[in-house]
Image 1 (spheres, protein in one colour):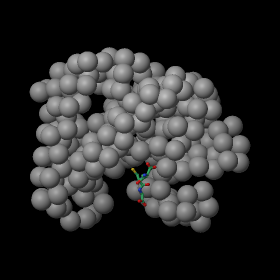
Image 2 (image 1 turned 90 degrees about the vertical axis):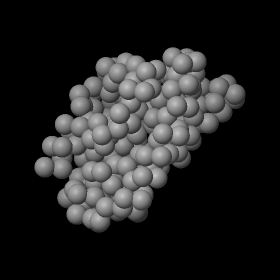
Image 3 (image 1 turned 30 degrees about the vertical axis):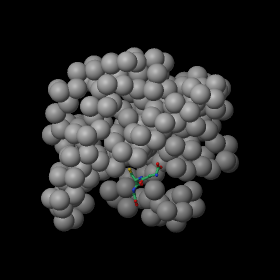
Image 4 (image 1 turned 120 degrees about the vertical axis):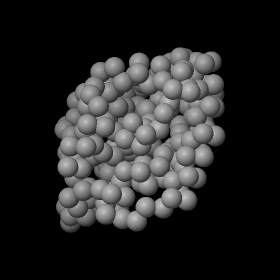
Length: 214
Ligand SMILES: N[C@@H](CCC(=O)N[C@@H](CS)C(=O)NCC(=O)O)C(=O)O
């Protein structure tokens, strides 16, 4: 059976689980507790040489990098969440990259400097935090505009682009980021968080993260 190596605190891992759940795949979820150093064990380094999550083992086919994994799983299932039509696929890629390059990078700064630095016992960097917040202010209006035009992030249909955006917005409550200025984004997020692909992972990312970090 398919194995997914991940950690519930990891947005990149959660993107893969949202995808696998949405595809209706059966899988074994193997928790790699990054906070307990489990990414660096000899056994796990044989799966992912950089000791990162996520990774999958699909009947002996090992794959890491969340973007590659989600595309592989969706294509293997022949699912419309990764459309085969060239232009639709390109549109999904465009917004997936936008979320992975811009939203994720801005959120990484905010998440690290508001939350993770304490959990990891590291130095906070105020300048990096302010830059992250500035980027969020710059990019979220665009995302909200997109969701005014379409029911989902890349187009009306649910696609892989939704999962990366949703996963990366999971820490907003922990990070004290207020999304109320973005009503369409807020509505989209609430709607997707009620769906099975999400609730099969957790009901609240904040609570899940807090229990992992305790
Ligand atoms: N580009 C990678 C990023 C993976 C990544 O950085 N994962 C983090 C958790 S969110 C991790 O494993 N960190 C542990 C480490 O760097 O040792 C992907 O999309 O899979």
